[in-house]
Length: 424
Image (tube, rainbow, N blue to C red; front, top):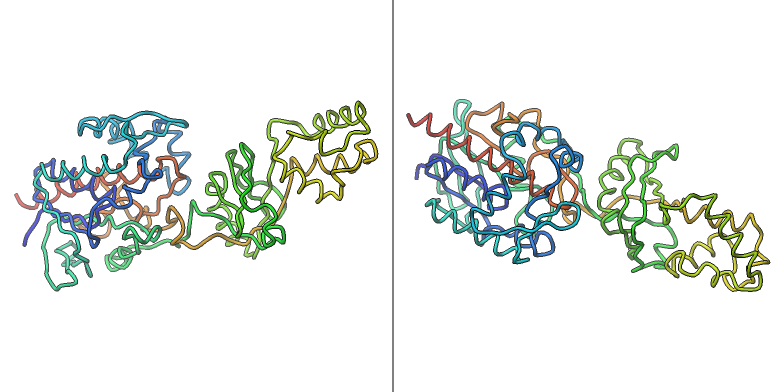
């Protein structure tokens, strides 16, 4: 069978690419190896689907630390506000939540998936599921078609590769696309996990001293070997049986991976400031004052409410302070070192969970080899890339899906225009 455009991959970027190509009147085949489309979309945002983020474009780019600047051209053509309008046209009303995150009013990711599938149907896009692609075919510097596992060949003037990275493999992202990109001459930058829990072999982690404890609104930093912060994120975190997790940790995780590699070390230090709104000296003076007022009260009761109780007792023990001792018997040096721990608790981490356990894949097809306005390969005519296969990665919060939908839109639109020009 011959098509104008073949889109490989039925995730957010592939669905958007197929719709965009269909809207341009192209004859489109959307093909996926799984048994249903939109699997990653259906579980995104905790099953609610965080379709985009409403922050201004400059802010959006800051939240895409992996080559976000590459998207400036794309956002000038199709941006987050266009994504919102696109979904509203499909009958999906969206609502804004904290930090600009946009969700469907239904709170159901499936309603977003269904709207996209209905649109494919309306545009008469041919959809094939359970159809693994084993190779992308090139001839004389241009794409020519795809070869399926069952030996079928489909030809096309344009091909969009939108098969994702290597994260969340049960949704079908198993890294298939990298070989097809390399065959076309593309560079695949180092792949690594991002937005992933961090591991530690510190004894307090191994002994599960703080397992299950959440710290709210703390500042978490990744330090360089000289003890200077490489990045700091203020959010929540949780201690686990293998290390740490939670929003602040996920955001710091890629900096842990990069620091281990850059400084060629086995461990990196992280720092928790559990009271980011308080200055160390003021806090010290305040506690000294409380102790003076009630010297016979035990220290644990004087400090009640300052920190979650398990973390408070943990830091007191770290500083060799008996929480049941009368406050007046504790030296000022000990109180000062405890206050320092509240603001600067440092511990070592040794990596992250695997790329398969990550929410997002870092690395991918080098963006230097992609036209930023069209998503077309600079090395192979008629070849387009969209979504997580590209070396673009953001924080969670609607940023990755925004990048996927925007690159998908541009890839699909331009793939259709190329195919139609070639038809003429």
